Length: 216
Image (tube, rainbow, N blue to C red):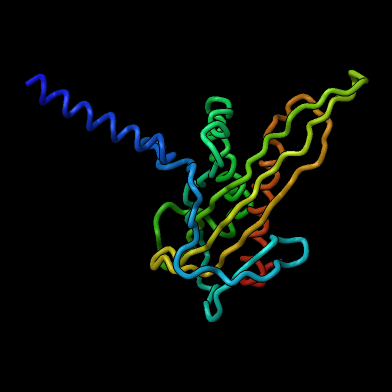
């Protein structure tokens, strides 16, 4: 009996170790990864430069009737780190808060015009996002104690819009956003630049959908 229990214990420990080493979490649904991500569905996107003031690179599938998409399913964002040390350097709870901030940024940007829904439907797009290069803004000391700044932070992302029913990719994008040096005023946290990137990406999705539906 003891030998059998020991065998079961070894199997459980092995499974948990696999989750840790691959950066997956059975509780959070793979909130981060430590491996190089082959992220995009299907064929490799054929990227072109994005629009002025928009994302860096974009690939829009030709022949898609985007006017039928009026809602969006948002998958939980996945964060990719280059090493366990980079992930372990995050404060407790920071990653989950950033995931909530990401979703909220898109929900706010889409508003009532393109409601966020939980389940696939024929008139809904599905948004998948991988965030890489997550950089916090670090306070830097100044000779004058009245002037302290947050140095540049930011984030990069790969994202794709899928038909939520078929999972066929219709749009793929890549973008990088770096922050600017900002005064370290009260209430401005170290992830301010990453959150600004989330807001920018949410607004770009809203702009894209508005252009399809001819809204101003």
